[in-house]
Figure (cartoon, rainbow, N blue to C red):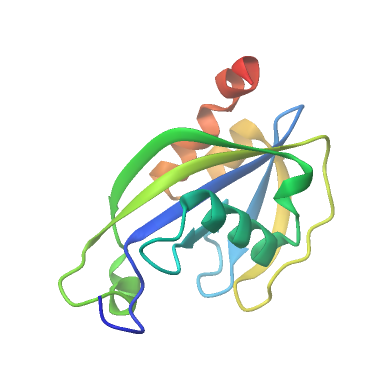
Length: 151
């Protein structure tokens, strides 16, 4: 990887409450695209849990050390949207995403990073799953009832 290119390795963090309300964020660069917290590793040796902690804090202002951040042990490879491929090295077309869940005791206020997100909403899990165009995000949200039951 040359300097300045994103590494095609990222995290997805589904932030949810005990009653399965899910935090969804609308991307600033793509109005109408709603998703959970996502972000790429900063360097090849950055532990994924550290990426998850950093991204949640940057994108929401929530300190994960105060709550239960769980590695779900799920990874998905997906094709990078064409409009974002220029951020990666030439020839990179797929990203490997690792899934985490962050359970909160209830709905919390969120501090958005305005360059990344326009708005946020707390939605019931089924509505949240239906809101995102990302299949990896949808599938992760749909796992919430069983993750919650085994948590």
